[in-house]
Image 1 (tube, rainbow over the protein chains, first blue to last red):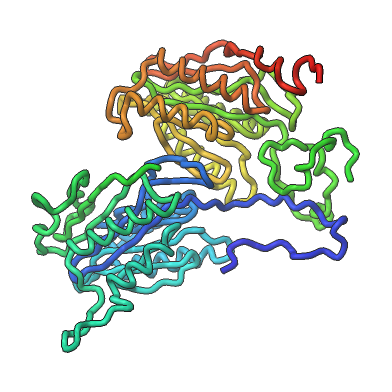
Image 2 (cartoon, each protein chain N blue to C red):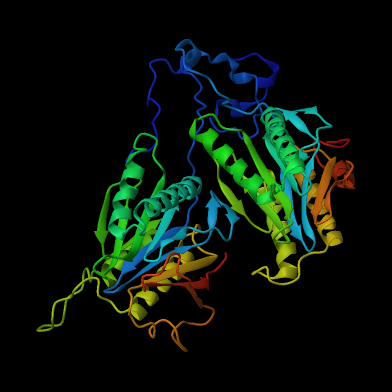
Length: 271
Length: 276
């Protein structure tokens, strides 16, 4: 996709060609994000490094955002666009709540994000968005977007600098691509993995991406959104998270419909 | 081929990337866009300031910048202050285009004057460092979105009176924002930032939870970094100021210079007296 206007490839007389020195309003701030849906929960994660070229600008910059009690958004790409896009989304969510006295639902937020992104089709937000949370029917859901608003609901998605490292891994482990069931065994069903398995996939994705991609590292933030009434025994308790990981529950933003959001943080290698 | 002296020995003039504007006059030949009637904005910096450094210490933040405003590779203005106080507890350190900096100063001072007038007649809360920072971030992002950037990279340092904590953050011409306990713009991001991080983490630890540097340690660190920058950044000068922002307010030092050692240079071919 051509996000940048390309200069003409040739001039009839190169010596008279103007010296192009056009301001480039975009940058790429690295990092990576991913989300995986479960039956009645959703996991949305991102690393915390922000870089430009070979420089690490900061070791902690947020790119996963809690929007409502059941929706979390991850942004990746050009951080200035990302931050300002999230600001606009949050403002629209507040307006919606004032108008309708209820928070916007997941699929409505997904459609709204499409219109916000496509509204800048000819000067796009250079941001890849992944939205995760709980659908109205109580199922865990993941929506992924391109910078101009194309979107679809999926069981999992990786985006950002290490997309090419992580997505094939998730295709194999979540969609069971290139795997064969045992003869006579039930066929694989995508998107129904237990939380403990998904957490392991997320942690392994980011530790591996940190090893092989220079723009990924420093820290990791994993948001877990659970449907109301669901047990938290597979997240909170001794021996579930590995050494160095920390979990906290984020309080309800609104009146609280029973859905619960947890934030799991973990350090990543800093080199 | 331009015959202006600014073009002499400047092979980089044919490169599209020229971070330090070593040839500010060289591109004045291209006017084709104007003849098409397009509006022209600031498309390159002319008179520029180089690195700004910032660190958090135990009682506040420290920001340093040298006194040079370069015109391309010419050390044009050698007594320019690039640290600007905004109210009693916020300070701006500016790199990049100096005319955009002067415009910024004018706008912000006008705003702060208005705020001061309001605070005299009402229980009007004063702008916190993060308020001023958000305003600047919106300004920079808004201008880049109009393809008319404010051609600067700035550090905002301050003391938040309500939260009783220090504030240090960065904004550039793209509207990119971030915060960290040590920050540096431009060449400083390459040369000084590693030294700043090393010293900061030696005391505070990688999680930053340990004790921070004291003011004395911080000033020593800044002095070392400004010296390194003077040795290796060709657009720098050995004359700089350090601003300290604490609960008590802002103090900006007089211009000072780092002691340097050049005796080794006598032995370098092309520098000292050569006997071939």
